Image (tube, rainbow, N blue to C red; front, side, top):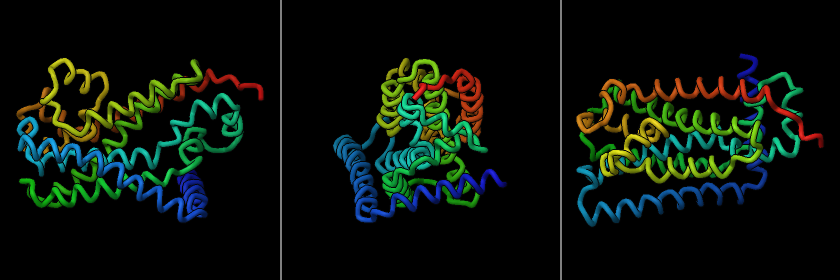
Length: 266
């Protein structure tokens, strides 16, 4: 509990520092909303032209997009500083994290909060609220609870992959190109039903990069479309648990890799 309290205090301090320049922070949030909704506009144009994508209606696609975007917003709010890891290692800033009585990884997470993540959260929440009226889902307390766990699990999937890939920086120092590419794969391919892709790509997006576990599998479970999946409906329904498992494995990989850290000598 003490460690959690310190982590929350660091995150709060980071957030307050961002809002010292309120106009800039507000514009960042608005810019994030516009950017994400512009991406959805492309999907809306495609669905409006062809009526469905892979048999999914506009409401279902919107629901899937909203889940993926909300999960990405949570991921970005908690783990965005992973994209600064290379610079932290190269400049020797990581040395300071090692001498403080709290996990260096937690310190990295709370190093700075990027407020444009709230644009993703607001945009994703708005799309989910809009789509929830048009999809055939019985919104029982169990379904609402599953949705909340699913979006958190999706964030853990992205976070786990980025932590594991970021661990390579302890050996190679500069892996940002690889991790940025992986981030774009999640952003570009996670918004669509996987069935529209060739079978080989579907396997890649399920077992090599677990993009399907972020939103497609839990959305298919809620929408009762599990019959079209490559995996067992039980595995798809357990997407949140898969996210937690991947995250815990990534933490072990980080722990092992960070032992090989060598200071830059600055």
